[in-house]
Image (cartoon, rainbow, N blue to C red; front, top):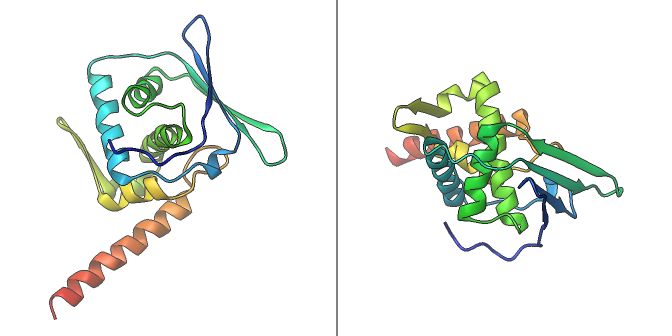
Length: 175
């Protein structure tokens, strides 16, 4: 994975049980964009960790909102914690870039699982998943919601714009 640009540190506390809590001084929607290649590598690392059954500890996040309140998110699913552990091992999550990468990976998986309109943009087979480059770009660049997810409308707009650009390139390239 690429070297990250300097970002603010994330405060990390580890309980005796191994559970980890990440405290961030800003909300999810203000986390930085990530490089597409880093997101693709995180996807591959998470898949490898799941295949190796490298289950990991429970993780929780506390994000400070502009009004001083907190948004809390707990990752209780075994698979999700496996993926987060893979990101922790490969990139680290002690800074906002690594944390953003992890949350974007999780938000992308959540989006693919629930939004059937994404079906044309990925294929899952025995050898893994094939993700459309525009989908990866959207997940790397678009803002997360205040709940650390992707907004369906924003992703759909981004993909439609990318599809239009691809059609335009094909049309212009043939002239």
